[in-house]
Amino acid sequence: MKKATTRTRQTVDVRRAQLIAQGMAFFGTRPYDAVSIDDIAEAAGISKGLLYHYFPTKRDYYAAVLEAAADDLRAQTDVDPMLEPDVRMRTGLEAYLDFVKARGPAYVALMRGGIGSDPVIAGILDRVRGHFVDTIVKDLPAHPRPRALRVLLRGWVGFVEVTSLAWLESPPGTISKTQLVDTASRMLVSLLGDVVP
Amino acid sequence: MKKATTRTRQTVDVRRAQLIAQGMAFFGTRPYDAVSIDDIAEAAGISKGLLYHYFPTKRDYYAAVLEAAADDLRAQTDVDPMLEPDVRMRTGLEAYLDFVKARGPAYVALMRGGIGSDPVIAGILDRVRGHFVDTIVKDLPAHPRPRALRVLLRGWVGFVEVTSLAWLESPPGTISKTQLVDTASRMLVSLLGDVVP
DNA sequence: TGGACTATTGAACGGAAGTCAGTTGTTGGG
DNA sequence: CCCAACAACTGACTTCCGTTCAATAGTCCA
Image (tube, rainbow over all chains, first blue to last red; front, side, top):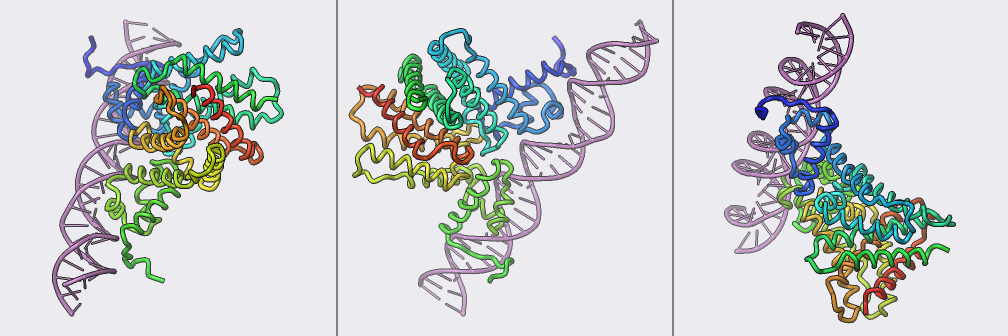
């Protein structure tokens, strides 16, 4: 057991990962400006200066934490592309909801995570939505108005996001995962039937 | 024309309204912590101390600004309850989109407005969604599982929110207001058909 | 007219973000 | 095995900004 006063040196990757994990715990629990750099540094057992060695500003640090949560979500919902489209959709939705359940705070931080319309932060969320839209569009035949289609698919992703949040924060037994998957699937089918020629 | 150095005294209501309007302009444009109390005070032509006479903290001030934007949105989308349900839905959606177009920055601030999962801020958005859910539920026959229904309706509101944001930020001609109203309506009908017995 | 009420000011405080010159583990070449 | 160069790391310092508060000055009514 090393003495706490001893300086411990880590590789860049390890330290960065530690700080990001630390950040998820903090920002998932408390609002952005109720978390101080000192808090994080203390919890991580490092000096405040070191955090600025890894992230230029607190804002950038926060963005990196959200980006990591976004990466996790994308990775978690990655589905075998060999499956049938409708199976893939259900499997993906189930994985999405599993992520929401398992990583509640990180998910909430990601979704509610804007800092008063910061473009960088908003961009992270936008890319998450765009990612899901991409995976849906890939399965579709060419569309005469792809941009319009994407706007509506983005909306469907929003439907999933908001039901997920409501589900997460609702008392147990309010609605089942299966029903959410069922309804979301049917909504997507209905949307596509309405919009795809 | 009064001299700028002269102290100008206003009634509470006028000052408060001025400061909130000021806040909408600022927070709609720049992220929360890029807006300083000094900026607002200077733009409003008052001292920094006075802002604290009206709002206990910067956070409370921000919340008041968002709350005002939320009130505006609710007021703007208020529809004559004498109309037929489906007409009411279309009219309400049109009013919603008109608000989005006309008050873009305020709408974006409201939607992207969280400050790193602040419960007070999140609550403002939640109440907006809840309000729309309420108005929909009022038209529906009693439902065996009202809480489940509300989760899904909240999701539909999310659909409208996200398509609205995407519409607002998309190049002109990407998708028409009419098509958005059409699709959102059909989505709601489809959702209700799926869920209401 | 004057006194009370309160909107308003400005200076000062405290705490947190961000900076930097110096320190100490680590590593690879002699 | 040693030492020199590199990079992770520190902590004290600066600066900026949210917040406080005692003092000031418009306004209104008696």
